[in-house]
Image 1 (spheres, helix red, strand yellow):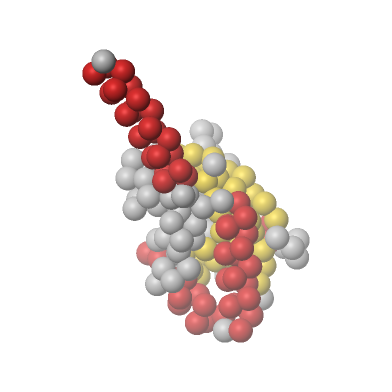
Image 2 (tube, rainbow, N blue to C red):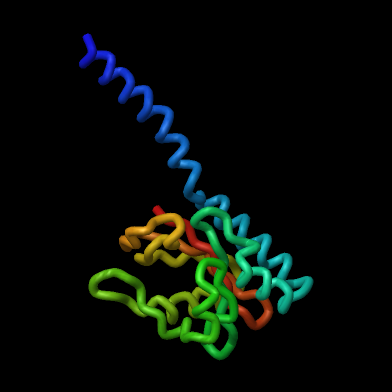
Length: 154
C-alpha cells in the first residue's frame, strides 16, 4: 500500500512540477515580443536603451537582448555585460564543429526585418548552472546602426 501511495505522490508531484519548470523558460513569442520592445525603446533613445540592457532591465528568465554596433563588437548584453566591447562578429557557436555565428547574426540583421538564426548556446548561469550547450533560436533585426537579437532556448 505504501508503494502505491509513493507512486501516486510521485505522479502528482511530476504533474505539478512540470508546469512550474515550463514557466521558467521563455517562449518564441515572448522572445520576439522582447525584441520588439527593445527596438521601440532604441528608436526613442538608443544610448539609454543599451545602458538599460547592460543593467539587466530587459532580462526575463532565460530571455535577454544583445546588440552589436557597426564595428562588430557587443554594445549591449542583457545576460553578460562583461562582453561589451568584445568581438560579436567573430563569435562561434557552441556546436561541434562550431559555426561562425557572429557573421550569421550580422548577415541576418541586414535584411531589414526580423530574421531567425538557429545555433547552439548555453543558458545563463543563473538559469542553468551546468552550462550545457543546447539548441537556441534568436530573432535578429537591425535598429539604427545596431544589430540586436533576443533568443529562446529549445
